[in-house]
Image (cartoon, rainbow, N blue to C red; front, side):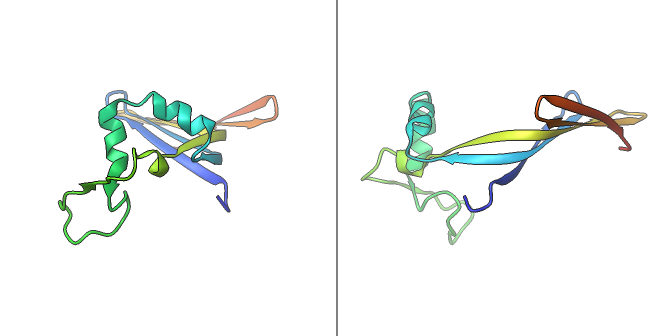
Length: 117
């Protein structure tokens, strides 16, 4: 939360397209945005937030099963990250050639540039 800069990377294997978005992030934990997203999760998805120790905690073995928390429905461990991106890089990894482009937004203006892959 002290540094809102963030990046998101995605890969579509079937289309051989990579996307990278760069911008600023806002964390929503325990607020109305988080509550609304939480209410739209399936029960099985909600259950993953009840494990103890919580996600990202060190464990003795990689396959050590987490225990379900008894005191919580999992919402306290749930957050929503809202990414407001201002740069999008698109890369197509073709079989014979690659193509890459950058789109950057400055207010209401978008600057599009071809880049060397």
